[in-house]
Image 1 (cartoon, rainbow, N blue to C red):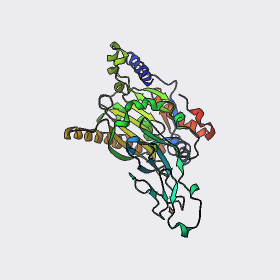
Image 2: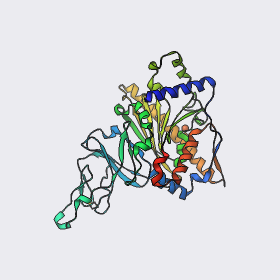
Image 3: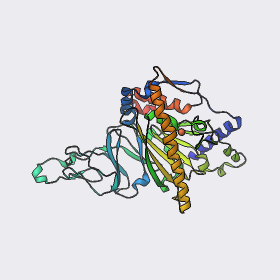
Image 4: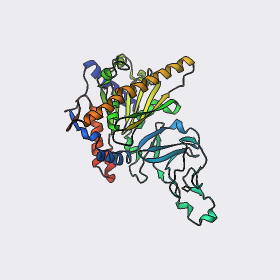
Length: 392
Ligand code: FES
Ligand SMILES: [Fe+2]
């Protein structure tokens, strides 16, 4: 089924490539500059976007064996994810039911049980409180209602989504709008994480705008990756999730071939964003490697943190191939840190210095239109009405 969607997109791309056109929005979009730095608005975005939307917080391969866990802090919420012996994942707020201490203090590991470092109350994979240190001294409490607080978690397309609101009624599959079925074409289940880095950046929306923007490739990145890149973009949306790809002349080879011979990997090229904070960029001749970037708001409106995961279909087998991969990923880190984010950090200071500044998205920048429109709608939408926002 998703192959049919890929073929439809490829045909749409080919038609635009031949005509030398792109899709255009009806009008340009104007976003008030202060939407990028106003502290009250930023807090509202954390509360209404990051604390209510499912967030893509990991790859299934990070939790290969039962007991494999990862802990992290996401917009101030400490949590951990663990592979249960039943094969599914669980996610919990990382806070002990005794006095609230963080139970898991390692960022990664493998454990059958989790013992709080403060007074050694101990929990199992189900989050159940299974042991109280010196229970006779402590006094009697009902352990069965003192488990860890579970968070909604699902695995789709070998990626892991967690919702930070334990009471969320937004079904994660509803939120995904079928987009995960497209992402499954990467086949991340058999891929490996080659390297991971963290990069500090500007306001999360300034940073995220860049991931949906091909308009800047041949200008800002002209000295690095942009030499032969198109600045034109075509956007495809599944709810708030968007794929962006340039009109691609290399697809025209399929005009004379039956659809059964069209390469899925070729049709998956370019950037797949996952609202509100992830970008997957495929590289290496049909998706043999990819950079999965997870972007998180930082401590203030003017800061963000991006985890870059460099994943490969197969880890390099020779020193030479390894060196090539190291160089490719070094370049991608440089491009994001020294070109995208360095520009973004200067951009936000400049925006703040100009009263009534507006940020403009052209008719060619449909990704920004959809993204900012969706953030705006989320800010206005009460919890009970959230599911109605997610239709393709
Ligand atoms: S706070 Fe965890 S055991 Fe006391
Ligand atoms: Fe860029």
